[in-house]
Image 1 (spheres, rainbow, N blue to C red):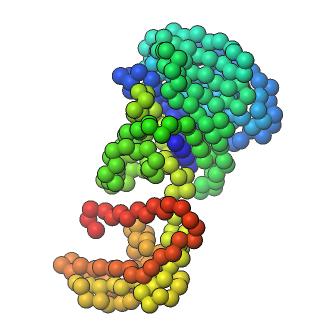
Image 2: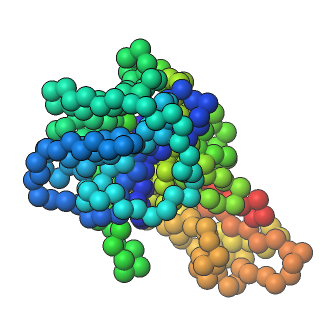
Image 3: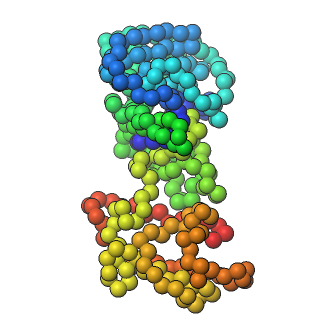
Length: 313
């Protein structure tokens, strides 16, 4: 399971108090730390902070929210400064816990959950009250990449978790694909008309996970949807390579035909690309466009296509 977000800090933070186990990973705004660092463990009233020994590894902070909820924050700069959360409330219950150092790891244990942090690279794993493994990060699966947006410096954050084949993942909002089990799916968490983003999932392994993140996040393939010509070779209706055949019509009568390599009228700002000849101001008329041709994959493997439209189109 992979999550990637761009712009601002990120995280993973559980929040359902009825779920026996929930976790939170909040990732910072700071730029990547590049210098080697000494291993350090700092205990606090609400948890513990671990500074891993590996070069470039982010500091990791565990905070006990209550006996079944642990918030995990990772920050390459070590100060854990981040923008205010839009979804997490500062409510705490029973915060009793114990911290113990064992070999190359630090354990934080409550009455219901144990979180273990590697003092080498900082990856975190969780177990229930009986010691049964519940959730674990992939070792080395957390990364921070500098990103510049509108002249400002931010971070793009990637987070990977181990997920057994028989695990099912539910939640993440009201999406339109008709999927119940989100395992293995590519999902973008972005509020978009009737596509509702709720960054919380529930696992069949009996834990909940809140992605405490104010930014657009992708679950699955971090690349997101790509323009057609980036991964496909296109052929028009006559078999000529390089584009599809686009036919524009008004009330079913064809007005214009041209070659197009992209199908993209996603936003109002894209309307200037629509040919003026095929536009009518008659509100009772209907403008239509169809694309015809063939596609050829530029690489092997499974390809996923997403066709979507607003309800008013």
